[in-house]
Image (cartoon, helix red, strand yellow):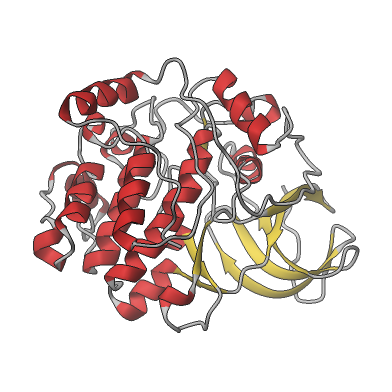
Length: 370
């Protein structure tokens, strides 16, 4: 694919006039742009020229996966399109703020009330993705954006949004999205320091429990200022992921024991020892935050097409997602309530049996830390 020239003032796709470059990732470059047809400003992510096999399919999958998850805590996808020379691009809402990574670099760690607020928002967004059969697989502070407030101002003034579904695994979506996963069996996908052990080992059945691990690790880092999997080289990082003991947060950062125990379970090396899904972590975090604002409840992870279709019907989504021209509106609030699937994946079912003997089941939480 020939590289296209990107510069301020250039008109892309006969519609989007580039204003300023916002950033660059492994797959694409992101610009702020003016929508000359509909008016207003958007962010447009344009795929970079690459020789990486299947990069185009991965890039398009990002747009389709994120577009399938209509939630206030997920960046809103406006369109997935081809521009000019056939280069794929994704247009999305333009966010003003900073990444959680930048906030942590400045502040070191988050105060407990702020930590609970941010993590509750992330859990709600990712839990909704799971209920629609989408597993993110690359959650990290760089992919959590804090919107609103002053850049460099208090993090507690912000709303968290989850970005970058570029390596999402679509476990149960139907239609075009389900046919475009583009994942090579056994491929190691993700950012090493935030990978779950099963991702490090290249397991072929990586599921939503990898996201449970990653959110637990982000919470650990936000609470303590320490990323326990960090190392001087890739070998050390992977060794830390699979073997290093993590000091309990209660001792390291003085957080409440209930939160410390929750994060410890989310970071269990054996995934069947983690919370069965994100509903219990949300319930605990929301209760500790002591907030009364309602939240749209999310259901259990969708592991089959029937459950995913039910999730999508209740969410008001169509049965299929076109390859291009998604042009859609975001559902702002009160979204997904789904039935528990008849059969969960083997690891999830095993975890459910273990927890059933350990403690009574809790009702899904319908309160938010926001």
